[in-house]
Length: 249
Image 1 (tube, helix red, strand yellow):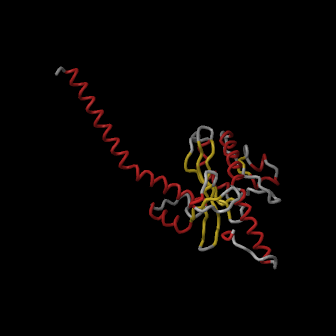
Image 2 (spheres, helix red, strand yellow):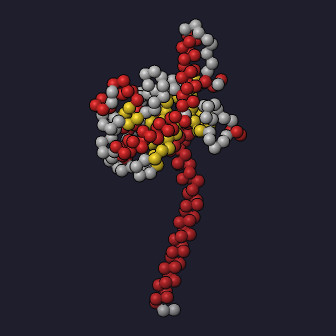
Image 3 (tube, rainbow, N blue to C red):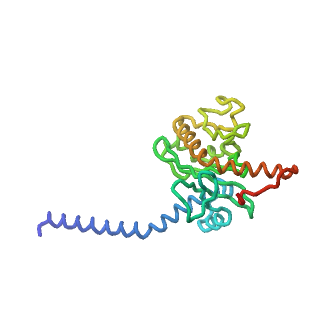
């Protein structure tokens, strides 16, 4: 066998061995990779409701234990009613509910919307009043680092806390990202529905704003049920009609 043929055979065998090793590694690690992705999403949900801080990095086991203890995964239909597992359809929506004991404290909506360069995925937590934002997290995006990529930073996400998805009359308006400082570009009456934009990332803000509105509109029937439950509790305390919990609806 001449030297040229030896070189070709060696290269072929080396490529074959490397391919087999890579395939074996990918197959062997797939289960762990899937689990790591799931744990990361659970961590983001817990961060959205405030159970894990930005600077906290608990072990995967601790995240899963906390998630199982505090979060209940549900599906709801277009009217906001809970759908049993055996009746789920393609139009039904996933919902994550945060419990403290038997009391609902908040619910979490998955965010899956277009960005400037790709999809933006995260979670938006809304308080049990069905109006106030409790937290926002981003676990995947393709936005430009230092510009649109700042959407995943703590300083930006914290701006959502306490903002409203309803106006002063309680009507749904969603949450929006201003082009600049809210105090400078948004009338005072509407500032509760806006967060400061990111300098140099106007398009990312526009895409997020549009995505929030489309997604939250789909979940509005859920929000309405929470608002109605809150109103009934107020009426009950004031001697009005008896209250019924959200779980009973």
